[in-house]
Amino acid sequence: MSYWFTQMKKVKGEKYADQMAFLQEQHGFSRAHANALVLYSKGNTSSRRYETLDDYLATLDETKAKTIRTIFATLAAKFRRAEVVIAWNQPMLKQDGRYLFGAGAQKEHILIAPFDAGIIDEFRPRLEGYHVNKKTIRVPADWKVDTQLLVDLVSAQFD
Image (cartoon, rainbow, N blue to C red; front, side):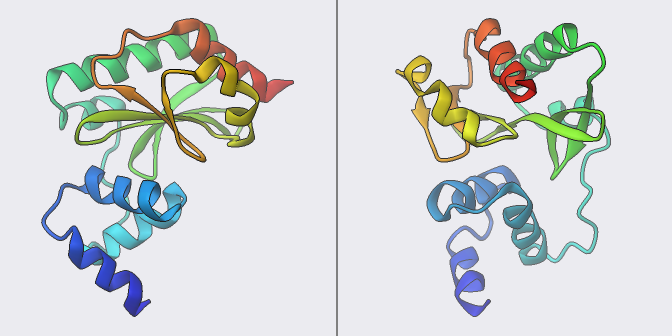
């Protein structure tokens, strides 16, 4: 653990989302593990930071908030049985106790992710032009939301 505490010193003072991105993008952490380390490093004893999507969006600039709101409005309209929840301090789409999709604002972009990371490999041909990580897809903060891509990413988890 001392190694990871040293790594966290490199991003001390950065925003929560930037520290999460550092661990996820640079070190391959899962959301859950990154969240645990970031919160521990910040001295938090409670891992819950936001109660609702609106609470989360209130911390973002107008551009990122609009993009993330559009992403989840699109998914909620298509998957009517699903609900938007906060998990790992990020907005997630959840249905029947199962997480399907998440998104999070970073310093200069937004990360989107089907909860089944294997879906990304299936969709690689359609993801040309995006920066694709192992478990996430980086989209611009002002992304013109590709509604069909979002619906297909979530739908593929039901196949």
